Image 1 (tube, protein in one colour):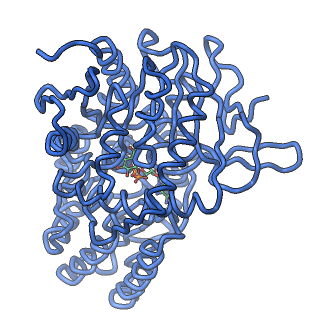
Image 2 (cartoon, rainbow, N blue to C red):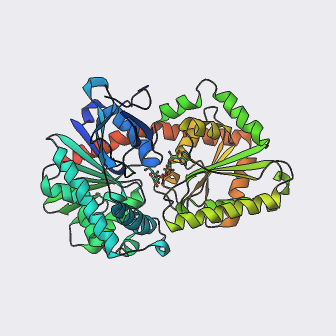
Image 3 (tube, rainbow, N blue to C red):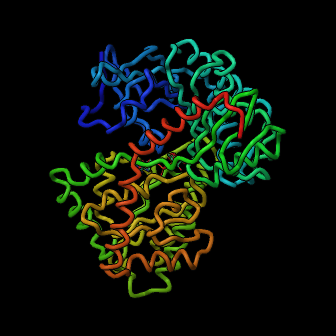
Length: 494
Ligand code: ADQ
């Protein structure tokens, strides 16, 4: 029985020749929250970059998605997302359950208090301890065994992200000839930083079980090869993007992730959206609206963004009373103390800015601590004259691409951190260094006062770039590299 939460309106336009017989996606969380009431199973799509990118892929290719349910309630061992898709393929979830200790040690502990901050260059937030690490190892083993138990010849195993970096080698041990890819959704730091992890050797060993290891940007890929070169004696080529491990060649490459542009454009032009956009603008009564959309995370630079808005309002009294910044923050990792304290600081700062500049017309900052449906988000994107995407460090940042593609009338301006992976492609954004408050403030001011001609020309270039390199392109680019990696797996280096 299918539990498809939304009709299969359209599929990605993928080159069928590249598709494996069956795709096995492995990630920490399943893409859907599973709710059970009596006999009824309902699915609610999760939030976050990995799901936004990979769910449309699985809807098009079919296959199995292995992941943690995100709760402690028992669920069926297999759930079908879409009943019948072209070519008889189906998309099924394979839930894994984790104990409370595993959640607190593997997920909240090692993954989110050690690896997440370290890989985003926040070494002061890192907490390393042996119990968390042991739990990380045993949960990785749990994932690997589950995949191995369902694996059939011809399957392609695609492992995602920093929670599961040991899984490639664990699967390789049991299935020496399996095709295995790994994609890291967050940055990979330089060797000097990476070696702070006391289990750095094991992580490298784990990743090298894959045939292909993908990163968002060339500099992340280079950091990885340089790290392996620093820590091991393995043969490698930084420029060729390969390493050699146990007689196997491991390919390393950059694959800038993207979004399903057709889906976002459809949402941005759906019937009734013009009324929603007008209602948002009428509600705020501001001449200029800017927006920020993030999971509430210290890497996203929300505090520095708010600080820059305060500086901008103080320096440019002409826009006081005419400008509103809407910050939509989705709750995230609320059990980690760094996230809880960040929430308190943001709320305090919003109150301070509104106290200082409010009462002169419109509200300076509207802060909402909640997740929004994608359709609603797109209405906000369309209503906003500018989007402020100013992370302190970010693998890619899909919000930047979603904003650009939602500007179907060619308007809008993007302020983008130079430390987001997206800044490599979106060179026509106003690029800023979020660590420098004054230039961030001026970047925002420049965006909201830019001439219509310049704004439209920059937006047209960015829309074209995102359209050319959309999620179809990303999947194909990765699968093509995987096919080549497997072909050359046993080749001696030139
Ligand atoms: P994230 O850190 O989650 O992803 P991002 O790429 O911006 O960051 O993706 C966030 C997703 O969540 C977007 O699709 C966005 O629309 C959605 N979202 C955010 N706030 C929301 C809100 N308030 N309401 C509703 N939806 C909201 C990780 C990496 C990124 C990388 C992606 C994909 O950290 O660098 O781009 O994976 O690889």
